Length: 319
Image 1 (cartoon, rainbow, N blue to C red):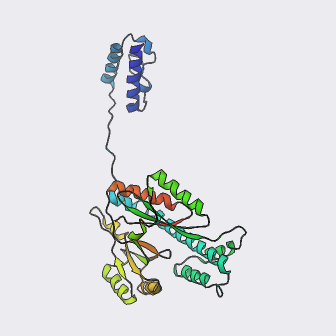
Image 2 (image 1 turned 60 degrees about the vertical axis):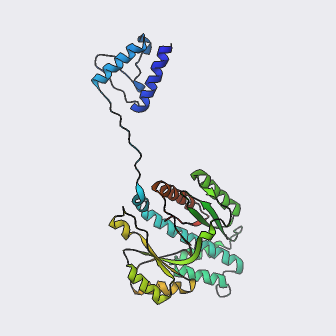
Image 3 (image 1 turned 90 degrees about the vertical axis):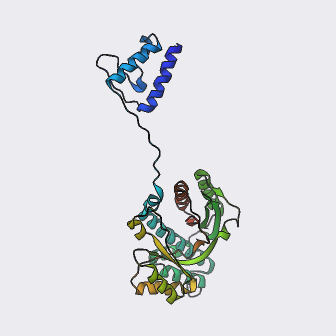
């Protein structure tokens, strides 16, 4: 009995490495899943079973190789899902503008001539190229029974590798939004931070994003000086970057709200394509460089947070 138990344990161990692929020897009993014989009781001892196993190995050897996990590195972290990320960013922009339209209409009515808040939101929607039908749909939605106004909230959290994050939320149900954020943080291994413990690491600004392939730094600096922009932030460069990665990175032109439209107009005149912010961005005052593992974990955390309907943007101080 003890010998048979040993045989089963040994067979189970082999099964884990063999994926249960059977093979047969023409002159002996077939070994199936886990290399166990069809009738283990026919072997009187552990040694006789092992002798049969040695015969098997002499006939056919299955080589099992193991490899260390391959670290995809920074380059793959940046290029993976590039188009999907851009589409998601645009969807979040449309969602946020829609929420702002609803809140403005519920506060002072649907007429922009008498509702200065709505007029400002409509002007911003035009500036950010938000489709007209999205604006009109949300003006109508604001009059629906049970629709509440949206409230802006910021949740401060800790990611991986010492990285801090700010989650921008515009929601009509505070309890729902905070519960959803907490659930994602718990599932991904992040941590909620106390109010004020992360916010001071960021500053709020208007930002125009320009792809590196669209213009060089000197050209953007000239535009920034002409239009009164505050700064031009260069995209981070890593040693393993290929030329295609650099062309897909972005410069950030930082400005005040007053000069934002002038910068967009100047870029249009120069024929330079750009991507707007969603009303503002939270820029880190200083950035933190992390290893590849932390970078991948932070990317996954950010992705999960952005899947939440109430979350409009996630900002972090990772380099």
